[in-house]
Length: 264
Image (cartoon, rainbow, N blue to C red; front, top):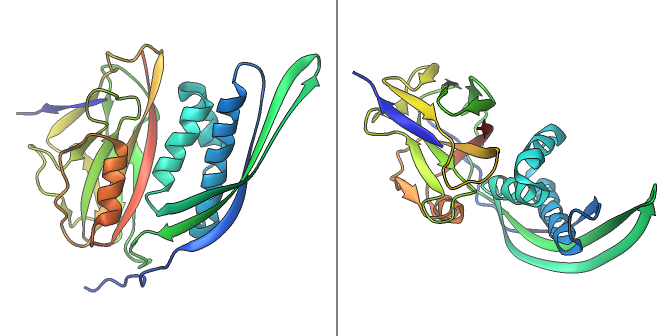
């Protein structure tokens, strides 16, 4: 998690899009360390990701998936990736069309295979489509130790409102989503400069969550830009609540995320 330490024109939008129905397949090939049920859950998450990609055109790199899987485990990683991708479009209806499960051997090792075919309705979110309305984010690191500080450089093509959330998938008792920016020390989130560095008059200190019995965890920063200010909550009990607020908003936005790992 990140602890904040205190220091002394016109925009063109896309027209509302109707749901698009697509079919997609996902598969999982694994050894005995993963149960067959978990393998099929992974296959279904991959099918949902492919359904989103067919409509939204987005992709998740194999490097990202490999890094995430090493920390969170394959199923949690796929589930987190689907959640983050679904900010740009939502699956409103899903039907499983086919499920194939097989078992085999490879070099005297038993392996399992599950393939799932789905039909899904995908609704693209109300994103700003203006190519001149954009931003990019660069973190100072992708791997942190407790006690280190996170900084970020963000470049903008034009003035816009910016909100940054921490998404904490491992949280079960407390809040899964915390608003990092704006905050009590950095209140102005209307960015007029072409580039800013955050934090400005604070420090973002990394610390390892006490309730996690692991050597490392993945966390995510979710960046939402809009041409009008949006009254987001400071905290959301679950990541799904943030996604619901995002999709239910009447404002049009552009969103991106960054993943980072914290090690003990």
